[in-house]
Image (cartoon, helix red, strand yellow):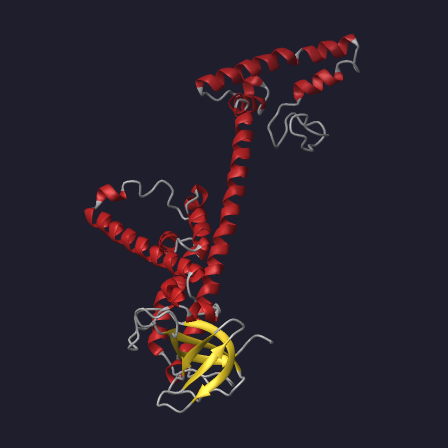
Length: 376
């Protein structure tokens, strides 16, 4: 036997459902009416009906007045309770379904944002590990690379750089990882601050989008908080102002470095020797030291070519390096031996500005020398 209201299986002959408390006596009487069509059966079946009606009225009155009906007077011990519950429950069924649907959608959105937070957390961990490896390498003396010449200072251990790398990158990224994994409000705050400081990097845009969503704020328990932070404390307002100023300056520096690397000389991109050797090239930003050998703030320039002539006759050793279009005179670093004739090399150096009025004849002082990467 099954309940007609909720479908729960119940014992045969039960007067009410044990799960939803629905009364089955009236339903059973109606169901048996056509089968027992005799006069005596109809008379017997008709007598409980006033009781059921009275019970229903009593239950409705009890639901309105808050009183509990007497089971002995009604004859239906659980139907009155059922009717009282159903009177209060019936209007809520549709609402509960709607609330359940909204709750399911909210939970799905929250799980989606939780996945984004996990991606950010493990990204921070990966960055921390990479910079940790770099900091360890900075305190380990480097061995010379065969065929490559570089100053001894570049091969020595650099503990100052290792400590700076730990402070600026490793520690903040580890703190961000822990804070995001544990869904701590301070982890979200530090992550947002780091993203603002590096807003020039596109990855920071993703971090800002994830951490500023309302679902993410609820995950961290900071929804609708901090709305009047600026008006509460002048000291906090001043701190925000200083932080914003630092963030603006830092992002301007990042953008300037990126633009300069794309549009100007780069230590990793090979520059044609014709651009370096001409005075027009110097005006384009390839000048790194004046005619007296004093540095003027220029960046190292990368060129590549073939050694066509080595000059060891004067006190300053030089060689002529040419590519397919032109050549430039390179001053040999005091720590390096002169290259061999017809040797194909790649040189990173500081370009000397030509004398005032000169159109060409610029020099380069090599900082690093390595075999050419080209195959020609």
